[in-house]
Image (cartoon, rainbow, N blue to C red; front, top):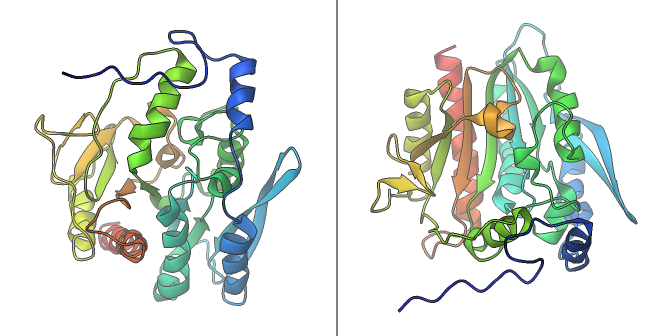
Length: 307
């Protein structure tokens, strides 16, 4: 006999949140790690080898967060641009540290071949609180559109605007975690006044392609590289991953622009969103970071070979 899901502790079932409920949600969020110690300090260590710039600042109550980007030092206007983003959802740790690990260990391999622009931690407030949303209970990864109410998203779009139509590749680094099912999806349903419908969490790595401009060979090249590091998520009994049809091994598709997703912010012909599964008993944090790095390298290699 199945039991009904426990109602989310904030709000009234069936009624969208107002300011009172959002304030209650915010009061429950606590700082659990340090953006300055774990992210900014690593970016500073890269400064001797790369151009580091601040592209914005988030002022949330007593907290202020500089938004940082890393660029190739040998930037040339005749080279294609590769955009790498991480930490759009701050709790997805390997997105942040995978991006930084790529810059530290592999960016030099592409010097003189591409211009790299890396925003490793788009949502630092959420990084510190290990959360998906910003303080306004907004998901930055549904907010990449004109007039965005999420400053994290708006700031990144301003940074990217000059290279939006010159980008060859954009790879956005994410994770799918067990807390998606236990916290974030129930919170989303409660916030929007909708019933929570339980789902499953795929065990393994997968990619999200753009349904408006699918690139199946590109996606498979990334999958083949990552499976040398960690396992690829299988389809469920319905042939789906997180409710979307599996179009190829380890690949689903979303209409990126329609949903306001980060991977939609350039006109790059090659776009993908990685999804690592850090809660798998078959994966370590180091493997998750390495999977992100392998995805970035494979994506750049394919794009350069097929531009």
